[in-house]
Length: 226
Image 1: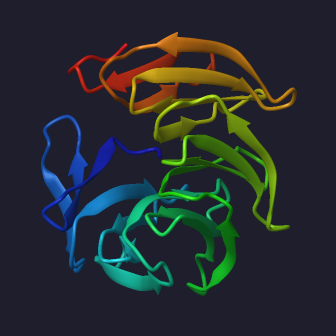
Image 2: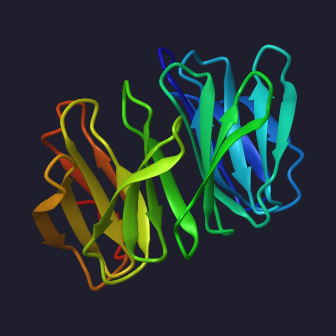
């Protein structure tokens, strides 16, 4: 978080840690047996988590330059991972329709969140809470209490697979985007749509808030960022 580095994950089954601005390789990891779709950096910058099509998540320790643990319980490829801001929990979303919450220290699955009826494509923690947002190919976004293991709310409004969900550092809103290019801004308290943006017909692949929560970036299949 405090160093000028970027982590990338690839279909070639490897991940890389690269220094900015020159782009020199700091560290790379091999060990997954299939594509890597997601990578997350530990809040303290001590490790990275990778999500792979081989149904596993690996925790990579920077100090030892090695795989610290392999997390196995998903029954299909894993799309995404996200650390809670304290770093003690890791969330994952999978093609097996579930999201899981892992104890980073022990490597054990604490909670399995079931309710989606298609792939879980994105998982994001709401800062400074136990709430986890999930985006699914079943066209819904859900908000879960990860410690109590129940779905707090499900948001309906997308008409195609939801590819990504984003939550700002502050505020009671979240944003999601889908395969038709539609972006929806949700009010998490009133459980209503605050705004909707049609960025189609191409798929919207990613949404991200800036630090103020007032700007939202949308990455699209038409080669543009809005």
